[in-house]
Length: 133
Image (cartoon, rainbow, N blue to C red):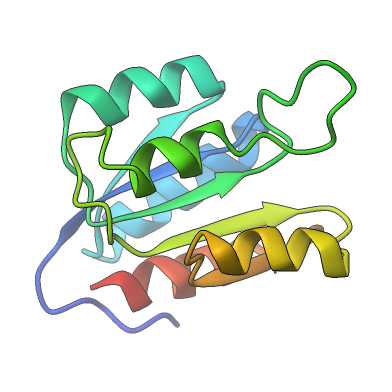
């Protein structure tokens, strides 16, 4: 069972799969970990990031990738660039299908705290959110 954070926190989960989003959100709430704000698209996540401050985020890099690109770094760059309501230094974890050395270098340069390789169990996300507290 994930360790409960000292104080419940607001977290952002950007993932296209509704079942995974709902499972993690409801479980985090029932464990008293805090509130997981869900976004199914990069556009929805951008709106949430403008409107509220989060203490951590887990972002699927495939969400919103366009133009033949395999990964979308827009959300990461907005947060790290101070263009959101959150601190630029909040912990961020990313979810990816196939991490490569080049991708890991890109993530390292953006101060990403954790890389979660798909597929994974919902518990991995809960443990990640618990580490944000």
